[in-house]
Length: 217
Image 1 (cartoon, rainbow, N blue to C red):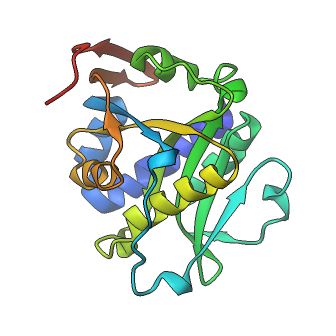
Image 2 (image 1 turned 60 degrees about the horizontal axis):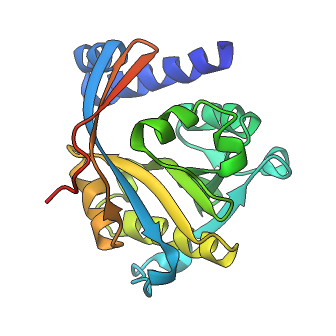
């Protein structure tokens, strides 16, 4: 619980510095979003278009066996704090490294770990049942200075390729409909959109309501 509060604290400070105190307070107390669950059959994964600077980046996976031995630097304090909590929950992460610093990361969870952790509520809300060869992707972050260069799609696509090489057949996830960059990354990579849900969070309490069982147009 204490470690989770540390994450929340650092997230608040980071948001305060970026968006201002009022926005940070509103976001921390209550927020609402229209969630778009997605799925991707990795057999349909196409060839990735690499940005010009792609050779300057390195993609590695961190998990409970190797994260303590890694000497990479997290520039965002809340992301580093999350590492210890999520690894303990059995999650795994891919991180994008540049000059030995983490410029992007994303988490994923297998069927076994998902149903023994807080992630299971999202699977229930979205009507997702994970099979052994499927994973749930979540919480992707890219440093602001790395955005707008095609790195988000390259990073996500590279992660999908690595998962495919590991034998994963399908991935699930979701994005906030107001997050236009996230929407375009998922659509560029040809994720299939599933029935949407309204997600609300009041302090540490979360609620969800499915909007429709029909596919969005």
